[in-house]
Amino acid sequence: MKLGHTGGDSRQTSAASVLAYIGLGANLGDMAETLRQAVRALAALPGTRLVAVSPAYRSAPIEAGGPDYLNAVVALETGLSAQGLLQALQEIEQAHGRERPYVNAPRTLDLDLLLFGQHTIASATLTVPHPRLTQRAFVLRPLLDIDSGLCAPSLGPLAPYLPALAEQEIEGLSLSLSGR
Image (cartoon, one colour):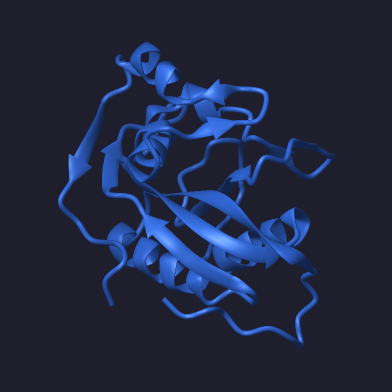
């Protein structure tokens, strides 16, 4: 994968790159194509390189109604700040018609900043690690597919959290999200 371009952008970049993990989800429209387009958009962010894309999973909505979700996780090496990356994620969601009529509404695209290096962030607009990271099998399973030994700040190793989520049914799919 090529390194994204830099310059002419309102997002801040930092001198050092950070490994960030982004959760992707959709349950409206052509979900597979939307996630493929999101992966390409993430790879094209300024100062950013796509490191890995997890397998895709289908999961039922949690604490919500609507169709099943298609989920995945990507790992990015980025020079963007956490706030700059969050802004970019929201812009990509908007470009795909994301609306927020109510909490847990069905969505064309959902991009969540799960981890940002070993940083812990608690601001009015961003919490990292993601506050429900260890409560959602559709996030934790693809994250561990990328790095089975992943540790998160203040949480430690993530693999031991997965067995407690066994009641959350998710289905692995043989679907490539990194292809063109």
